[in-house]
Image (cartoon, rainbow, N blue to C red; front, top):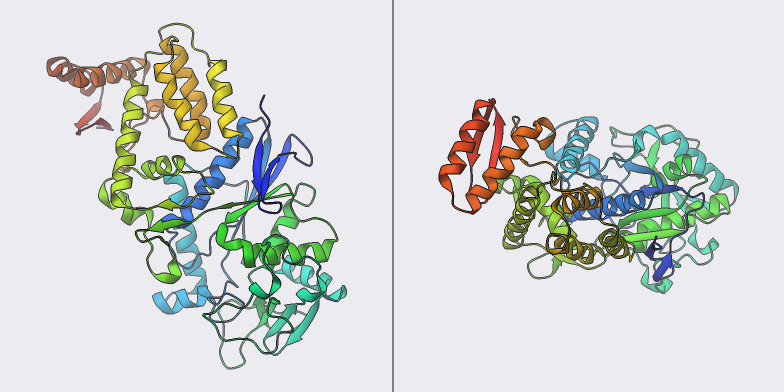
Length: 471
């Protein structure tokens, strides 16, 4: 079996992956701040993390995946100043912070479902882990890494050597965000909040008592507390978007290693941005974002067309968004499905072709090279092997691709039917009807339609495919 190589942001090079306690792998992914809908750029990051997780599983690792849900403490400013994003959501919608958090957590999980992204083993809300965060701050305080200002407790980065080991930037370049007012009480521009005090003149919806006074946790402390809680002995891989490198992940490393005295995760993987036309990244802060619903579902495009788009661009390269790109991805996905469904898995022995699998695995294990893996997928149809072998090989590959190739019909309506709901007899009629339509044998296609409908289904013909619904 080929060895798995991953690009580690810590070393800025590809490294052979070696789990701390193989075959177990601890995976931590930075979750959403649930004050608004996730946009396509956010979802691209979760797709890359899903490809990573599936590839680890494909390599026979047992993955334990932890993800946070930020429902408090993420401030609008880059460096711990400005309004809490959840409080901003409260003002925008006139609902409680708890209602805002539930609304957008549920929407986020629904988006993951539509994109066929595997759920984590543990989803932890930040608001459910306040004691863990307070205890971590207390440990840092005992070790003299903490000082207090009028607005909260801060981590003194001057006391942590190699603070910039993840960013690889000179310390003078890691300054407070240009969009916020400078905090003159901080000892160093890179110091960051561990605990913020509630305002005396304004009541917050989310605030807690602490040894230092009423307040709420800083943004960065949550991921350290949650990952150390669940992955203490398996700090293998930590993932997120490239925008987390210089601040959020750099601060996570500093506070975690200062508290424990141990290395905080061995591998750091970061996904590149999704850019809108003009080369600017898609971001909520710039109000130029598109949701999965607006960009695809409302335009009658399959959400999996976005997954197919992400497969065609390496996760460390910027990805471009346009309506045309999504439409092309939909056509490409439809073409792949049509070719797959035409395969007769009853012709010959159904087994995975080992030569093709080795090529597929070699591409995957080269730092998640999904475009190269897709080329192997396309080669399956041209391979000089029996159809049953092609079918089983593609089913095996789809464990990583996540395109639901065995789901003949994919639709958002409540009456959708997947191949798992169909008998082998109906599946065969569906396969033959696709072939008849492509051969323009409309008489045969109509006859098969009647047979499928007689079995209790409705058939809806579209340009490139047809869909089946329960009556």
